[in-house]
Image (cartoon, rainbow, N blue to C red):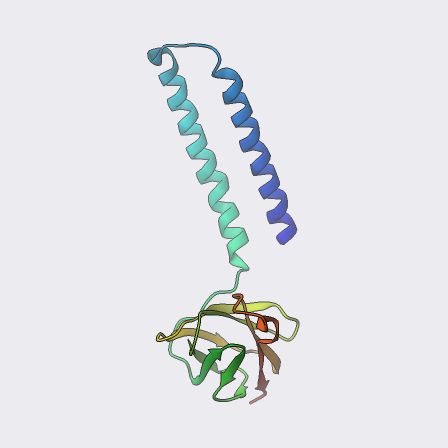
Length: 170
């Protein structure tokens, strides 16, 4: 999926660059507003239609696979506290198939927390901020060892800010 998004991004950037080059070249000729305005409105309408007819489906397809926060009350609660340079979980084991609500905060600076599956694919993320509790909800369907990694640079030992959560079969 990332390859498709990359190709679309390159195509879009190339198209925008071509339009800018065209406008730069065309701006050398003088024209009256009344003569240019109807054509400009047609171009604007065409661009809006392209945006809606191409941009909306591309957004739906590319965003469908993105991790998202699950809604609803959690069956299990895990309190996560971040500090330089550690994650403290009040429990390190949860059952599979049960909604889990992570209540995330920090004792010092902002940290970004990412929840990763055993293959290190991102499942969800939120911010850990001093004086504030963010909620991240997820239902683990497969047993295994999941990782919590810091996503926001927080100092020299940032790379070692890792915690593990074990998901066990019910």
